[in-house]
Length: 278
Image 1 (cartoon, rainbow, N blue to C red):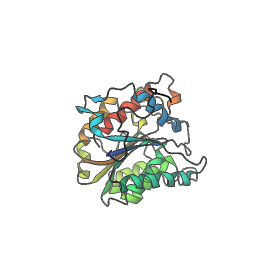
Image 2 (cartoon, rainbow, N blue to C red):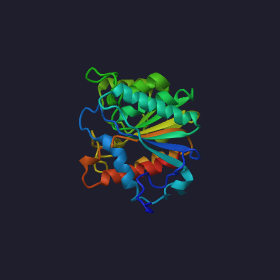
Image 3 (spheres, rainbow, N blue to C red):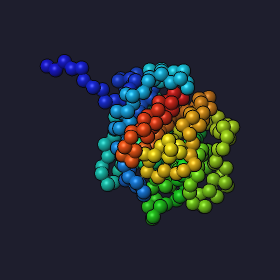
Image 4 (cartoon, helix red, strand yellow):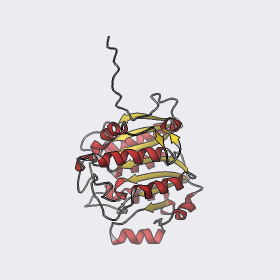
């Protein structure tokens, strides 16, 4: 009989027991609708390995990961080439998490994985809102004739929660029609206080890592110049600690485009800090 010890490939600082955890980390390795640079399907595995380079303590929030009480459930397995079945698998598993009285923390994968998360969570809350960190609007109704697209994910989410329950941070790229949608519905948050209208809501936070400037996050599918610094993103998280955050995801790391590994390390730290406000 082998006695080990063996290396742990789960996220550093996780609670190995699902039943006693409050948050469930769920790997969502899907990039089937990516329109520019694929590869975000490899992010969850690489992020888990990179997590072991972190400290368990966050000086930004004065908390340890053990205080968060999250369980890493691993990566879901998806049917290759079938977007709709993949989305169904995500929705079913996220619904199970909330049936068990827990919160989800999704790790993508491309941004379309947020849609089935919102579909599942909306079955449990009738006052759900989304705070969306991204370089891109993601408000198209379709892209290249495809309704299910990472470019349309937030638009589809607003069909569930209503556009009045959406705030977007860091947006700097999109179609003119998408910016008009943002203006009509006042979704853009340019200062912290713009989020206050959602304080009585149940908040899902979705972070597309290209919200960060490419000088910080080059390993992503569609890098856009003019983005947030890491400190600016953390300052938004600090403001959100007084909101009722009931779920989150971090998406769109494509680790192989940054062979230095820095983008993966940054993504891992973003996840650690976001976990602190759940």
